[in-house]
Image 1 (cartoon, one colour):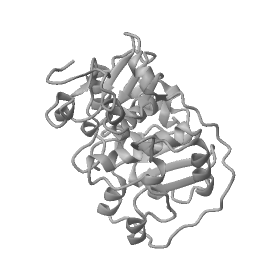
Image 2: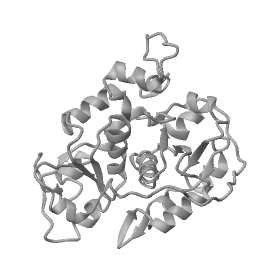
Image 3: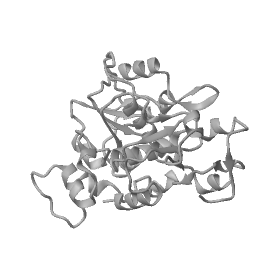
Length: 312
């Protein structure tokens, strides 16, 4: 079994015998000290390929493949539907990747047959740092829209294919519904909030160190921001690094106070949403926001403070 979340999602750490009758979220709480309330859901936030294979026919679950239609047509997880990433993050206000307007988001969910109580597993390919973050960007969007149980497939479609699990080329259609969830923007930060943030608010850049420092982007980063690179959440094959390491990384950068306000940003919003998902859905941080405009919007304003060639 590959390293990463697989041993956690299967609820049994390597070398530990299974504990029958103990729910998975309580077991995780006992092992890692994560508050059990973070796992009061009917699906884990990250699921393994083995778990998904065993649960393909769960009637209340949607497997959401966000790859391009061409990739989906060549082979996908049986039963999965295709709603590409480009529909979940759209050009708006002269920015590349923004949340769709509320009415479009509701329509998108309704056409996909997703209501607020469905379990949704987001699947994509893991070939690049950006495609890996896409799954968690879409997961953030679904949760913001009011979908209660959203998960990402650890290792994505790549791991599924490596393990020679079954694939289908049959397109899956859905019965449209009227979406019944409530869209909440509490996890969204706008530029004004970043500019006027109090000193108690933690601002974190989630791009690569080269971008943050100013080697690949001359502006560097937003003044006062710390750094937590999203690509470091994954191993080379696209599987998450072990959760114990992610937890230690989070505590080192974001701190142990899970009630503190945190704003994460990146280049256009994808990397930031990945850390939002990890912090809130896995580690139970309670006050995290994504600055969706990120550096793309920030540097359009000549008065917005930036700094380069220094670590905060």
